[in-house]
Amino acid sequence: MKPTLLVLAAGMGSRYGSLKQMDPMGPGGEAIIDYSIYDAIRAGFGKVVFVIRHQFEEDFKKIFSVNRFGGRIEVDYAFQELDYIPYGFQVPKGRTKPWGTNHAVMMGQSCISEPFAVINSDDFYGRDSYMEVAGFLRENEGGKGVYCMIGYKLKNTLSENGSVSRGVCKTDSEGYLQDVVETLGIKKYEDGKVGFDDEGKGGARTELDPECLVSMNIWGFTPEYFDHSSEIFKHFLTANTDNLKAEFYIPYVVNQLIKAGTIRLKVLPCEARWFGVTYKEDRPDVVSKINKLIEEGVYPKYLWA
Image (cartoon, rainbow, N blue to C red; front, side):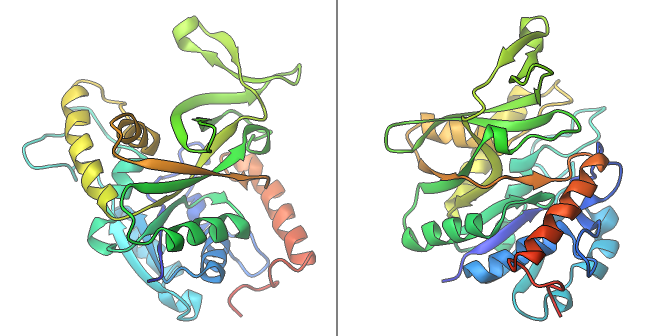
């Protein structure tokens, strides 16, 4: 059975200032999503499910329909909205945005019954990452509770134009994840060191090892992950009744499952340099890197010609 690719595309790109998921980067008007789908097809994925918002559904589907990909992969859609929560719960008064990345993953349950990978729509991961995840999912097909993620070196995931959020990973001697901490505001300081200003310590600098592995939200799961997520989400909502900014992140759920002994998650190290469009100022660099990959023959000039 071919795995499915679940693309998290519901974010409105608040820092970037527009629907960056649709921003053309390639010479034929290709967005980063196009390169992700192209790499996924080459890696053997059979379906892509886009998680989007109803408010830009029409515009999104005009661009990213099955026709765009030449019938090479099945296309489906799921929707993430603030009020898509379990029966018996209410949206806290004053909350205006959905609940984060794992909430978005949960929206794919009605479309997915096979092993699947999860990616961000605005991150360029490269062909090798898709090959690694697809290979792992095929090798472990039918094996419940054995997941994976691609681990990037922190130094290869920074933006020159501002701070970033990364899931900082701790692994055991066999490369299985022990803990992943969603860390906000990571940046390179003027002295070349990497870290973040820890609000819990009065804004003091906390340095990080540039060689440490971080999550860029490229994960490999099997379908029972949806049921695990639903149960944990109920506890999360109960605990965050008055927290209007609480985020139900993928690392939060993964950590809960690891600590409970419910799953094992293999971290697959990657030497590649990630790039993406966290900020508008990142765009020229992304376009330049894509053009270089085209010159090197990694991608055709026009993906879907």
